[in-house]
Length: 115
Image (cartoon, rainbow, N blue to C red):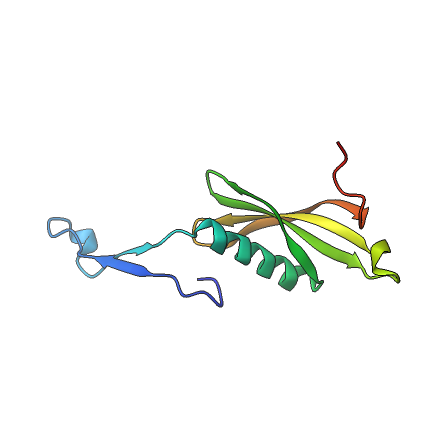
């Protein structure tokens, strides 16, 4: 389970006719909402890169869970308007566990998407 989050768990009774489930109960974990996925994407990138995150730039539901776009300050410069930023994509499963991440691009602040 992902650290720092309290997810609601629901337990159901085991099937009485199937011996495989005699001592086990099924566990259901409530899937992440869009807001929770965005927050978790920010937290994961901050922890993995040890850099300051600017915010979430995109959020997309996938077949495995969520893909979150996160903008990160790659290099602090003076003045701040010349900072170097990076755009990362974070893939999370439906419970918020990390599936993978990658840096998509780097660019100077103020030189984001064109067109």
